[in-house]
Image 1 (cartoon, rainbow, N blue to C red):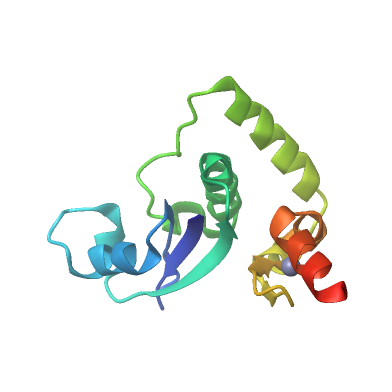
Image 2 (image 1 turned 45 degrees about the horizontal axis):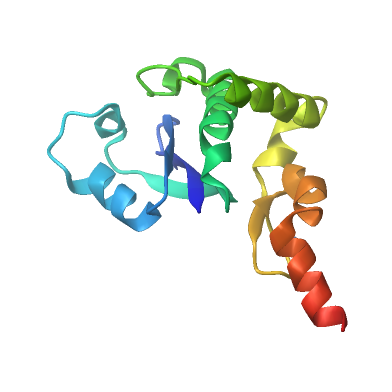
Length: 144
Ligand SMILES: [Zn+2]
């Protein structure tokens, strides 16, 4: 279980992050005294961009969404640096991930969609989600 999230504020600044404990992480962003980049946002709202059952997908997804939001926010994305990938297989996944998303409209991708199986996903993730184990299990359990 892991989550990619976006923090954003009224002035149009944003921050992309990943976590497996969203509530704790948001609290850290809001109240910790650490001098992190997200402090530049001041008061912020947040939203879940995508959630994963498989944490292995997180790094690739974080990188993907970093690139996406960098293209939308430009210098107003306050992340310090690009998320780094270390393993070759993660790179391969990222390439695949990018190909799946190519040609889809950014706005469409950011919108959330609540699936009948209880997952909250992005519109752009519908097709791969419908093939996911969680969704298939749900279909299987309800159709019998
Ligand atoms: Zn589903």
